[in-house]
Length: 376
Image 1 (cartoon, one colour):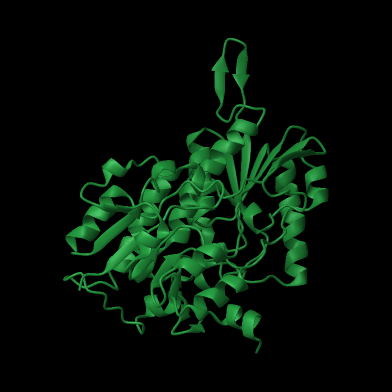
Image 2: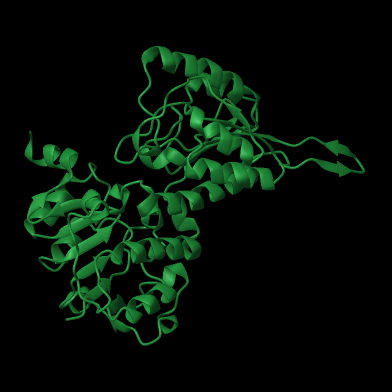
Protein backbone atom coordinates (compact mmCIF):
# COMPACT_ATOMS: atom_id res chain seq x y z
CA UNK A 1 0.00 0.00 0.00
CA UNK A 2 1.32 3.45 -0.95
CA UNK A 3 2.38 5.70 1.88
CA UNK A 4 0.10 8.65 2.76
CA UNK A 5 1.88 11.91 3.55
CA UNK A 6 -0.09 14.67 5.30
CA UNK A 7 0.99 18.31 5.54
CA UNK A 8 -0.97 20.61 7.89
CA UNK A 9 -0.92 24.39 7.88
CA UNK A 10 1.60 25.97 10.24
CA UNK A 11 -0.07 27.51 13.29
CA UNK A 12 2.81 29.31 15.01
CA UNK A 13 2.30 33.08 14.86
CA UNK A 14 4.52 34.63 12.19
CA UNK A 15 5.50 31.35 10.53
CA UNK A 16 5.06 31.71 6.77
CA UNK A 17 6.91 28.65 5.47
CA UNK A 18 5.16 25.47 4.32
CA UNK A 19 6.69 22.01 4.40
CA UNK A 20 6.05 21.01 0.78
CA UNK A 21 6.17 23.03 -2.44
CA UNK A 22 4.37 22.16 -5.70
CA UNK A 23 7.52 20.85 -7.39
CA UNK A 24 8.37 18.51 -4.52
CA UNK A 25 4.78 17.24 -4.27
CA UNK A 26 4.96 16.39 -7.97
CA UNK A 27 8.16 14.40 -7.39
CA UNK A 28 6.63 12.57 -4.44
CA UNK A 29 3.63 11.59 -6.52
CA UNK A 30 6.01 10.18 -9.15
CA UNK A 31 7.28 7.86 -6.41
CA UNK A 32 3.66 6.69 -6.03
CA UNK A 33 3.25 8.29 -2.59
CA UNK A 34 -0.11 9.89 -1.82
CA UNK A 35 0.20 13.50 -0.64
CA UNK A 36 -2.60 15.25 1.21
CA UNK A 37 -2.43 18.98 2.10
CA UNK A 38 -4.53 21.18 4.34
CA UNK A 39 -6.62 23.59 2.31
CA UNK A 40 -4.96 27.02 2.13
CA UNK A 41 -2.01 25.81 4.20
CA UNK A 42 0.61 27.11 1.78
CA UNK A 43 -0.95 30.56 1.26
CA UNK A 44 1.49 32.37 3.57
CA UNK A 45 4.37 30.90 1.57
CA UNK A 46 2.74 32.36 -1.58
CA UNK A 47 1.67 29.01 -3.05
CA UNK A 48 -1.97 28.61 -4.09
CA UNK A 49 -3.88 25.37 -3.77
CA UNK A 50 -4.25 25.42 -7.55
CA UNK A 51 -0.45 25.30 -7.89
CA UNK A 52 -0.58 21.76 -6.48
CA UNK A 53 -2.11 20.04 -9.49
CA UNK A 54 -3.89 16.72 -8.90
CA UNK A 55 -3.24 16.88 -5.14
CA UNK A 56 -5.77 15.95 -2.47
CA UNK A 57 -6.82 18.62 0.03
CA UNK A 58 -8.52 18.43 3.42
CA UNK A 59 -10.24 21.20 5.29
CA UNK A 60 -9.59 20.02 8.85
CA UNK A 61 -6.96 17.90 10.58
CA UNK A 62 -9.32 14.97 11.18
CA UNK A 63 -9.79 14.52 7.45
CA UNK A 64 -6.15 15.39 6.77
CA UNK A 65 -4.76 12.78 9.14
CA UNK A 66 -7.17 9.97 8.34
CA UNK A 67 -4.98 7.04 7.29
CA UNK A 68 -1.83 9.17 7.18
CA UNK A 69 1.51 7.42 7.72
CA UNK A 70 3.78 10.48 7.69
CA UNK A 71 3.16 14.07 8.83
CA UNK A 72 5.48 16.84 7.65
CA UNK A 73 5.79 20.21 9.36
CA UNK A 74 8.18 23.15 9.68
CA UNK A 75 7.67 24.21 13.30
CA UNK A 76 7.25 21.82 16.24
CA UNK A 77 3.61 20.98 16.81
CA UNK A 78 1.89 22.51 19.81
CA UNK A 79 0.76 20.08 22.51
CA UNK A 80 -2.76 20.32 21.13
CA UNK A 81 -1.55 19.58 17.60
CA UNK A 82 0.61 16.70 18.81
CA UNK A 83 -2.41 15.15 20.52
CA UNK A 84 -4.19 15.07 17.13
CA UNK A 85 -1.39 13.28 15.25
CA UNK A 86 -2.28 9.75 14.13
CA UNK A 87 -1.07 7.20 16.67
CA UNK A 88 1.90 5.21 15.37
CA UNK A 89 2.60 7.69 12.57
CA UNK A 90 5.91 9.32 11.65
CA UNK A 91 6.42 13.04 12.25
CA UNK A 92 9.24 14.92 10.50
CA UNK A 93 9.77 18.53 11.57
CA UNK A 94 11.97 20.91 13.45
CA UNK A 95 11.35 19.86 17.06
CA UNK A 96 13.64 22.03 19.23
CA UNK A 97 15.28 19.01 20.91
CA UNK A 98 15.91 19.55 24.60
CA UNK A 99 13.67 22.59 24.84
CA UNK A 100 10.18 21.04 24.82
CA UNK A 101 10.03 18.07 27.19
CA UNK A 102 6.22 18.15 27.35
CA UNK A 103 6.04 17.70 23.58
CA UNK A 104 8.41 14.75 23.80
CA UNK A 105 6.08 13.13 26.36
CA UNK A 106 3.07 13.47 24.06
CA UNK A 107 4.95 12.04 21.08
CA UNK A 108 6.23 9.16 23.22
CA UNK A 109 2.82 8.37 24.68
CA UNK A 110 1.14 8.40 21.27
CA UNK A 111 3.82 6.02 19.93
CA UNK A 112 4.83 8.53 17.28
CA UNK A 113 8.19 8.10 15.61
CA UNK A 114 9.52 11.62 15.28
CA UNK A 115 12.57 12.80 13.37
CA UNK A 116 13.98 16.20 14.31
CA UNK A 117 15.52 18.10 11.41
CA UNK A 118 17.96 19.65 13.90
CA UNK A 119 19.37 16.17 14.58
CA UNK A 120 20.17 15.20 10.97
CA UNK A 121 23.85 14.17 11.13
CA UNK A 122 26.19 16.71 9.60
CA UNK A 123 27.94 14.23 7.35
CA UNK A 124 28.62 14.37 3.62
CA UNK A 125 25.94 11.82 2.81
CA UNK A 126 23.27 13.88 4.58
CA UNK A 127 24.09 17.30 3.12
CA UNK A 128 20.97 17.32 0.94
CA UNK A 129 18.88 16.74 4.09
CA UNK A 130 20.56 19.41 6.24
CA UNK A 131 17.71 21.82 6.91
CA UNK A 132 19.71 23.73 9.52
CA UNK A 133 22.14 24.74 6.79
CA UNK A 134 19.51 25.52 4.16
CA UNK A 135 17.56 27.76 6.51
CA UNK A 136 20.74 29.35 7.89
CA UNK A 137 21.67 30.48 4.39
CA UNK A 138 18.37 32.39 4.22
CA UNK A 139 19.00 33.92 7.65
CA UNK A 140 22.53 35.03 6.74
CA UNK A 141 21.37 36.72 3.55
CA UNK A 142 18.52 38.50 5.31
CA UNK A 143 20.79 39.59 8.18
CA UNK A 144 23.04 41.46 5.77
CA UNK A 145 20.04 43.27 4.30
CA UNK A 146 18.77 44.12 7.78
CA UNK A 147 22.19 45.52 8.73
CA UNK A 148 22.35 47.62 5.57
CA UNK A 149 18.86 48.98 6.19
CA UNK A 150 19.52 49.88 9.83
CA UNK A 151 23.00 51.28 9.25
CA UNK A 152 23.08 55.09 8.90
CA UNK A 153 25.83 54.79 6.28
CA UNK A 154 26.07 53.55 2.71
CA UNK A 155 27.54 50.07 2.54
CA UNK A 156 29.42 50.64 -0.76
CA UNK A 157 31.97 53.31 -1.61
CA UNK A 158 30.33 56.01 -3.70
CA UNK A 159 31.90 58.73 -5.82
CA UNK A 160 29.53 61.67 -5.98
CA UNK A 161 29.60 65.36 -6.92
CA UNK A 162 29.78 66.04 -3.19
CA UNK A 163 32.90 63.92 -2.85
CA UNK A 164 33.79 60.29 -2.20
CA UNK A 165 31.81 58.35 0.39
CA UNK A 166 33.86 55.72 2.20
CA UNK A 167 32.34 52.23 2.48
CA UNK A 168 30.90 50.95 5.74
CA UNK A 169 32.81 48.40 7.80
CA UNK A 170 30.90 45.22 8.59
CA UNK A 171 31.92 42.52 11.04
CA UNK A 172 30.39 39.05 10.91
CA UNK A 173 30.79 36.92 14.04
CA UNK A 174 30.68 33.21 13.30
CA UNK A 175 31.67 31.77 9.92
CA UNK A 176 29.18 28.92 9.69
CA UNK A 177 26.59 28.73 6.92
CA UNK A 178 24.69 31.84 8.07
CA UNK A 179 27.90 33.77 8.65
CA UNK A 180 29.37 32.93 5.25
CA UNK A 181 26.15 33.95 3.52
CA UNK A 182 26.15 37.23 5.48
CA UNK A 183 29.78 37.84 4.50
CA UNK A 184 29.06 37.20 0.83
CA UNK A 185 25.98 39.45 0.86
CA UNK A 186 27.74 42.30 2.68
CA UNK A 187 30.55 42.05 0.13
CA UNK A 188 28.05 42.20 -2.74
CA UNK A 189 26.61 45.33 -1.15
CA UNK A 190 30.07 46.87 -1.19
CA UNK A 191 31.04 46.94 2.49
CA UNK A 192 34.51 46.29 3.86
CA UNK A 193 33.99 42.98 5.66
CA UNK A 194 35.82 41.32 8.51
CA UNK A 195 34.81 37.97 9.96
CA UNK A 196 35.50 36.51 13.38
CA UNK A 197 35.49 32.83 14.28
CA UNK A 198 37.29 30.80 16.91
CA UNK A 199 37.80 27.98 14.39
CA UNK A 200 41.01 28.41 12.43
CA UNK A 201 39.54 26.15 9.73
CA UNK A 202 37.13 28.96 8.79
CA UNK A 203 39.95 31.23 7.63
CA UNK A 204 40.18 29.86 4.11
CA UNK A 205 36.42 30.08 3.52
CA UNK A 206 36.24 33.64 4.85
CA UNK A 207 39.13 34.85 2.72
CA UNK A 208 37.73 33.14 -0.38
CA UNK A 209 34.75 35.50 -0.06
CA UNK A 210 36.99 38.56 0.05
CA UNK A 211 36.74 39.24 3.78
CA UNK A 212 39.51 39.61 6.34
CA UNK A 213 39.68 36.82 8.90
CA UNK A 214 40.05 37.69 12.58
CA UNK A 215 40.61 35.12 15.34
CA UNK A 216 42.08 35.11 18.83
CA UNK A 217 41.92 31.38 19.64
CA UNK A 218 43.52 28.43 17.86
CA UNK A 219 42.39 24.81 17.91
CA UNK A 220 38.78 25.55 18.87
CA UNK A 221 37.17 23.16 16.39
CA UNK A 222 34.55 20.89 17.92
CA UNK A 223 32.36 18.09 16.58
CA UNK A 224 29.65 18.43 13.96
CA UNK A 225 31.16 21.58 12.45
CA UNK A 226 30.62 23.67 15.60
CA UNK A 227 33.18 25.32 17.84
CA UNK A 228 34.03 23.57 21.10
CA UNK A 229 33.49 25.15 24.53
CA UNK A 230 36.32 27.60 25.26
CA UNK A 231 38.35 27.65 28.45
CA UNK A 232 38.14 30.70 30.76
CA UNK A 233 41.53 31.90 29.55
CA UNK A 234 40.52 31.49 25.90
CA UNK A 235 37.26 33.35 26.51
CA UNK A 236 39.19 36.29 27.98
CA UNK A 237 41.61 36.24 25.05
CA UNK A 238 38.68 36.13 22.65
CA UNK A 239 36.87 39.00 24.35
CA UNK A 240 39.90 41.30 24.25
CA UNK A 241 40.55 40.70 20.56
CA UNK A 242 36.91 40.88 19.59
CA UNK A 243 36.35 44.14 21.51
CA UNK A 244 38.98 45.85 19.37
CA UNK A 245 37.32 44.75 16.12
CA UNK A 246 33.77 45.47 17.27
CA UNK A 247 34.75 49.02 18.21
CA UNK A 248 35.70 49.82 14.59
CA UNK A 249 32.62 48.29 12.93
CA UNK A 250 29.65 50.18 11.55
CA UNK A 251 27.58 47.00 11.44
CA UNK A 252 28.01 43.76 13.38
CA UNK A 253 26.16 40.56 12.43
CA UNK A 254 26.40 37.81 15.03
CA UNK A 255 25.50 34.26 14.05
CA UNK A 256 26.96 32.00 16.78
CA UNK A 257 24.33 29.45 17.75
CA UNK A 258 24.32 25.85 19.00
CA UNK A 259 21.12 23.85 18.38
CA UNK A 260 19.30 22.94 21.59
CA UNK A 261 21.42 25.21 23.78
CA UNK A 262 21.34 28.92 24.71
CA UNK A 263 23.37 31.14 22.39
CA UNK A 264 26.83 31.99 23.74
CA UNK A 265 27.25 35.56 25.00
CA UNK A 266 30.01 37.04 22.86
CA UNK A 267 29.30 40.78 22.72
CA UNK A 268 29.33 42.29 26.20
CA UNK A 269 27.60 45.48 27.29
CA UNK A 270 31.03 47.07 27.63
CA UNK A 271 31.81 46.23 23.98
CA UNK A 272 28.57 47.90 22.92
CA UNK A 273 29.48 50.96 24.93
CA UNK A 274 32.77 51.23 23.01
CA UNK A 275 31.11 51.05 19.58
CA UNK A 276 30.65 54.02 17.25
CA UNK A 277 27.50 56.13 17.62
CA UNK A 278 25.03 54.92 15.00
CA UNK A 279 26.57 51.47 14.76
CA UNK A 280 24.25 48.48 14.32
CA UNK A 281 24.16 44.95 15.73
CA UNK A 282 21.98 42.35 14.02
CA UNK A 283 21.84 39.39 16.41
CA UNK A 284 20.85 36.31 14.42
CA UNK A 285 21.15 34.23 17.58
CA UNK A 286 18.20 36.03 19.19
CA UNK A 287 16.07 32.85 19.02
CA UNK A 288 18.51 31.34 21.52
CA UNK A 289 18.73 34.43 23.71
CA UNK A 290 21.25 36.34 21.61
CA UNK A 291 25.02 36.66 21.30
CA UNK A 292 24.88 40.18 22.72
CA UNK A 293 24.22 40.70 26.43
CA UNK A 294 21.84 43.55 25.61
CA UNK A 295 19.79 41.82 22.91
CA UNK A 296 16.05 41.68 23.53
CA UNK A 297 14.71 38.86 21.33
CA UNK A 298 12.10 40.08 18.91
CA UNK A 299 12.86 43.76 19.53
CA UNK A 300 14.98 46.56 18.12
CA UNK A 301 16.48 48.75 20.83
CA UNK A 302 19.08 51.49 21.18
CA UNK A 303 21.83 51.38 23.82
CA UNK A 304 24.74 53.83 24.05
CA UNK A 305 23.78 55.13 20.60
CA UNK A 306 23.99 51.62 19.09
CA UNK A 307 20.98 49.95 17.44
CA UNK A 308 20.59 46.31 18.56
CA UNK A 309 18.21 44.25 16.42
CA UNK A 310 17.08 40.82 17.69
CA UNK A 311 15.02 39.27 14.86
CA UNK A 312 13.20 35.97 15.42
CA UNK A 313 12.53 33.19 12.91
CA UNK A 314 14.41 34.99 10.13
CA UNK A 315 14.03 32.23 7.50
CA UNK A 316 10.28 32.77 7.62
CA UNK A 317 10.76 36.30 6.25
CA UNK A 318 11.69 34.75 2.88
CA UNK A 319 9.04 32.01 2.73
CA UNK A 320 9.20 31.10 -0.95
CA UNK A 321 12.85 30.10 -1.21
CA UNK A 322 13.02 28.96 2.42
CA UNK A 323 10.09 26.60 1.78
CA UNK A 324 11.60 25.38 -1.49
CA UNK A 325 14.89 24.46 0.20
CA UNK A 326 13.21 22.90 3.23
CA UNK A 327 10.90 20.84 1.02
CA UNK A 328 13.91 19.48 -0.89
CA UNK A 329 15.58 18.61 2.43
CA UNK A 330 12.46 16.61 3.35
CA UNK A 331 12.35 14.97 -0.09
CA UNK A 332 15.91 13.72 0.32
CA UNK A 333 15.16 12.38 3.79
CA UNK A 334 11.97 10.68 2.61
CA UNK A 335 14.03 9.01 -0.11
CA UNK A 336 15.59 6.90 2.65
CA UNK A 337 12.17 5.79 3.86
CA UNK A 338 10.00 5.22 0.79
CA UNK A 339 10.83 2.66 -1.91
CA UNK A 340 10.17 2.96 -5.65
CA UNK A 341 6.71 1.46 -5.23
CA UNK A 342 5.68 4.16 -2.76
CA UNK A 343 5.82 1.75 0.19
CA UNK A 344 7.10 2.91 3.57
CA UNK A 345 10.23 0.86 4.34
CA UNK A 346 12.53 2.82 6.67
CA UNK A 347 15.73 1.22 7.91
CA UNK A 348 16.04 2.60 11.42
CA UNK A 349 19.64 1.38 11.57
CA UNK A 350 20.60 3.72 8.74
CA UNK A 351 22.99 6.26 10.29
CA UNK A 352 21.03 9.25 9.00
CA UNK A 353 17.61 8.05 10.15
CA UNK A 354 18.96 6.70 13.43
CA UNK A 355 20.79 9.95 14.14
CA UNK A 356 17.65 12.01 13.43
CA UNK A 357 15.31 10.08 15.72
CA UNK A 358 13.71 12.01 18.58
CA UNK A 359 11.07 9.50 19.70
CA UNK A 360 10.57 5.91 18.51
CA UNK A 361 8.70 2.79 19.60
CA UNK A 362 7.08 4.51 22.57
CA UNK A 363 10.36 5.87 23.90
CA UNK A 364 12.28 9.16 23.86
CA UNK A 365 15.42 8.40 21.88
CA UNK A 366 17.15 11.78 22.14
CA UNK A 367 19.18 11.24 25.29
CA UNK A 368 19.31 14.83 26.65
CA UNK A 369 15.53 15.09 26.31
CA UNK A 370 14.99 11.64 27.80
CA UNK A 371 17.03 12.59 30.87
CA UNK A 372 15.12 15.86 31.22
CA UNK A 373 11.80 14.00 31.11
CA UNK A 374 12.56 10.73 32.85
CA UNK A 375 15.74 11.39 34.82
CA UNK A 376 18.97 9.40 34.64
